Image (tube, rainbow, N blue to C red; front, top):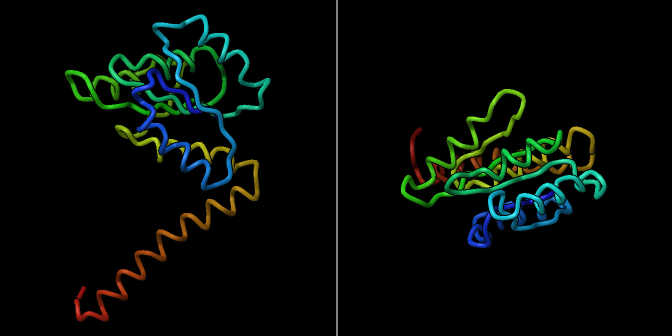
Length: 162
């Protein structure tokens, strides 16, 4: 798994992806590479992903948000884009740039700043061929259901009516 972002200022937003991957025991590498300022370095990095057993890329970017698309153009690996807020349009430009890729160069896009969902989607992809990860993912989803049931029971005990 690779977590890539266009600027060191994106570290805080993208660190949530890393924390989620760590929770599931998924090894990952994290790097800041600009599609605009270092295109040759980016191309070299992407060209080496398979050799390092990377199978999914999470790419976060703000403003012009070229990074996820540039990575997707250079590989056949799944790429999940995380639009990062900022700039004059507060992230809407990033959202549209990542979501509106040309035919043949898909980038899955999650919500603004939502690197946690990007990590969950990446885990779902990996879980297709990893039974242990699939079990962890099922338990994670079950925790949501249990939390809702617990909240309902607490409300009922306090006298709330549905």
